[in-house]
Amino acid sequence: MSTFYPDIDRIHEEVEQIINDVRELESDFWPQIDLINSNFRKSAINLIHYLALRKVDLSSLQEGLRALGVSRLGQVEKHVMANLIRLDHTLSLIRNKKPVVDEPLDFISYEEGAELLNGHTLSLLGNPQEERRARIMVTIPTEVAWNRDFAVQLISSGMDVARINCAHDDQAVWEKMIRNIREAEKQCNRKVTVFIDLAGPKLRTGPITRRRQSFKLSPKKDRKQQGKIPIKVLLSSEFGESRQGDVIKLPFLPEKNARLNTGDILHFMDVRGKFRKLVVDNEGEEGYVAFLDRKTFVQENLEIFRGEKNEKVGRIGELPWKEQSIFLFAGDLLELSKFEAEGGPAEYDSSGRLFRLARISCPSEVIYTHVKVGERVLIDDGKIGGIVEKVNDEHLLIRITLAKTNGSRLRSDKGINFPDSHLRLNGLTEKDKKDLAFIIEHADVVNMSFVNGPQDVYDLQTTLKNLGKTDFPICLKIETMDGFRHLPAILLTAMRSPIVGVMIARGDLAVECGWNRLAEIQEEILLLCEAAHIPDIWATQVLERLAQKGQPSRAEITDAAMSQRAECVMLNKGPHILEAIDMLNEILCSMRPHARKKTSVLPSLKGLMQISI
Image (cartoon, rainbow, N blue to C red):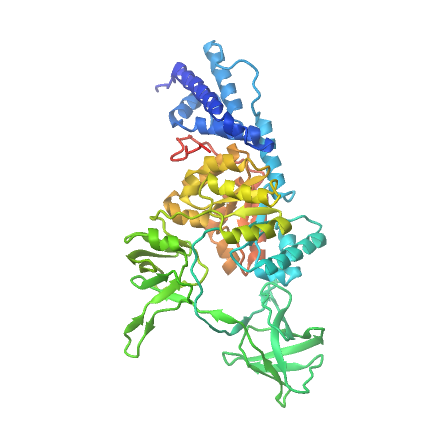
C-alpha cells in the first residue's frame, strides 16, 4: 500500500503567498476602510482578507493540508488572518523556517470573531430564546391590526422578529399592527424586533376585475385536544375577517323591532344549501356574539331566522369584493400592459371564438423599452413562465410555456421577473422614501428590497441622513443576480452604518439564478456575511407547506434544520402559521447542540470580486 507524502515546501510557499496577497489587498483598501463605521472596522478588514483568500481555488491546498494533518482553512470566515498566521507558524516549525509574519499583529482572534458576529446580531435582531441560537422572524398578516390576541399567540409560540411589508396595506394598517405587537410584548414580557420592508422596485402584476364573494367560516382545530373550536361570530354593523383571531365580524342587518336574546337558536341555509345554526351567547357594545360549530359559506343578503316558527330576524349585510383570478395553461397568450387598468381572463363569444386575450397590467416604463422578443418571463416566484413573442411601447405579448396541467392561477400583486433582460431598476423609489419616514418613527429596522449594487445602499444611507437617522439599523435583501454579484461592495458600503443585516430572499433569487444554482449562491452569501460578521436571515418558503396547508413536506423539515446556520429564519404568513412557528422552534432547539458542520474545499468565488466602492 503506497503512502501519499505531500510537498510541504510547495504547500508552505502557497500559504506564504496567500498571506502576502491578503496584506496587499488590505493596504489597497485603506481609503475605503476609513469610511467604515467604527462598529465594523475590524469586520471590514476581515472581509477583505477573506476576499483575498478566495480569489484563487484552494481545493488542492486544502487536500495537502489534510494529508499533513494540520489545520485547514474550512472554517476560516470569522478570523481569516489569525488562521493563516497559525498555519504559517505550524508549517514553519515543521520546516524549521522563520514564519513570514512574526511581529505582533492586531488581527481578529477566533473568540473575537464570534463575539463580533454575536454583538452585531444582538444589535439588529435582539435576544433569541434561551433554548436556541437562531431567531424566528414572522411575516405578520393584516389580521394583527385588528386582533391583539393573535399577536400574543405569535409571540407566545416563539416569534422573535415581526416583519411588515410595505408592498401590502398602508401606513394606517401598519401602525395598528405595530401598536398591537407592542401591547402583546408587554403581555408576554418579551421584546420583539419590528422589521419593515420597503416595497422597492419590484415588478408586480396589477389589479384584476373584482366580484362579490361568498365568505367561508370554518372552525379551527384545537391544537391540544385535536377537536374543533366553535367559531365566535360577532353580528355587527361591519365586516372584519380574522381567520386566526378570536372573533369574526359579520355585517348583520336586523329586521325592524327585532331583538336577539341570550340562548336564541338562529338558523339559515348557507350558500351551498346546508342547514346551519347560530347560538346567541350575549350582546356586547358592538353587536351580538354567537357561536357556529360547522363549516359555513355565507353571502350578502343571506336571511337568518329564529325558532320553529321561522321568524325572520335579519340578513347578512354587504360583504367585501373579491378579485377574480386568471387561469393560464401552457400555450395560452397573456397580454402585459403598462396601463393601470383592471386585468381579466380571456373572453370568448357565443361560438367559442377568442375575442379578447387574458390581460394584466404592470405599469413600469422600463419593461416596454428594455425587454426583447424571445426573453423569458417568470411570474409568482416562477410558478408561471412564458416567452415574449411581441413587444411595443405599451404591451408585451407572452406565450405561456410553464403552468400546471390543470391550469395555474394568476392573481394580482405577484412578482414578475425577466431573468434574461437587463432592466435598470432603482433601488429606492419615491414610495420607499415616503414610507421610510414612517418606518424610522415606528419600527426597529428597515429592510431594503432589491439591492442591486452599492449605490442602492448609499442612497438609503443618504436618505436616512437627510431624515436625521444616520444610526438607524438597515437590512439588505439580496434577491437578484446583480445583488449577488456585487455583494462584497454592497457589504462594505453597508458597513458605513452602525447596525447591518442581510436577508437571503430565496424566492426571487431562485427565479433569477435558476433553481440549480440556488444552493451554491446561498452558501456563498452565508460565508461572505460570516466573514463580515454581519447577521443573515434565511428567508422564503421555510415550512411553507405547513404554514399554508397544515402539513409539512420532508424536504421542508431538512431545509428548516439547515436554516439554523443563519442568525434568523423567516416564516411567511399562512392559516397555520402558529403550527409552523411551533415546529420551527422545536427544530431549531433540537439542532442547537449539533456542530455547525462544514468542510469547505474553498473554490474561488465566481463572479464575486467586484469590490471597489
